Length: 111
Image (cartoon, rainbow, N blue to C red; front, side):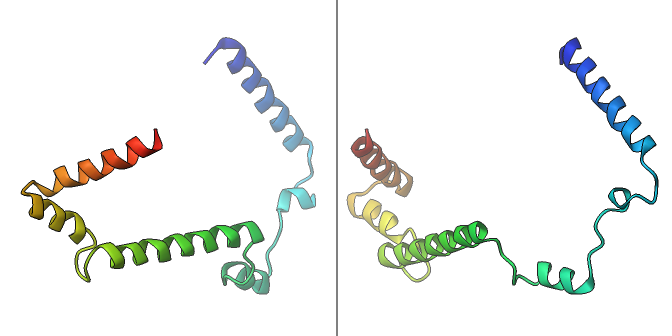
């Protein structure tokens, strides 16, 4: 860190300390917000999810469904990579090489 940055931090800390020292202990700001039991239950019970957070959760659910669907469509019940293993076996190469060929195909299409 630079000396100027350190000095700015020191000045900020001193200003915050001076303000806190000058604030009465019974000032509501010093006590903070007191949660009621009902608020705690509601907040942590999962019933009050922010709309943008819910949209994110919904997107994750869709991604989970898509992943599971593709695993079923391309793999087998017990091996989601069965198509890659079987393709490699069919042409007589190691499965990781088959995966690299497929990856190369996809990257080439994107380029």
